[in-house]
Amino acid sequence: QVQLVESGGGLVQPGGSLRLSCAASGFTLDYYNIGWFRQAPGKEREVVSCISGNDGSTYAAESVQGRFTISKDNAKNTVYLQMNSLKPEDTAVYYCAIDCASGNYKEVDYWGQGTQVTVSS
Image 1: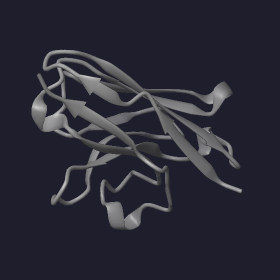
Image 2 (image 1 turned 90 degrees about the horizontal axis):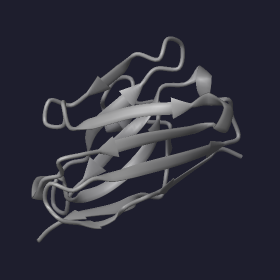
Image 3 (image 1 turned 180 degrees about the horizontal axis):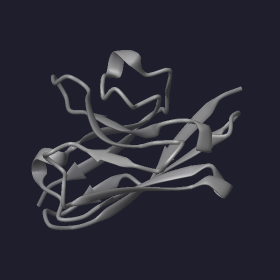
């Protein structure tokens, strides 16, 4: 059974930080491209960041570059998203996803259940 379980979301003030975690089971994470999408109410799901399985290279959407950092621990089969300098427009449900390489939600094979991130004063 393949399972992705997110955690770490919550309510934070603008300028604050959160660290999201995604624990994967049922497969070896280092073979797959894993990352994060987000979806705000009434808006299309969009890619946030992705890390490759074979060489560890990363991609981040322009809107989060310089603020968010993706990383993974292959031994723990866990991927992280460190989010700094959060803005109200970052408010969304964040989903862990495999395969994220294309940046297209329609090409994702597996989704986590999502974790809510709310940035508000």
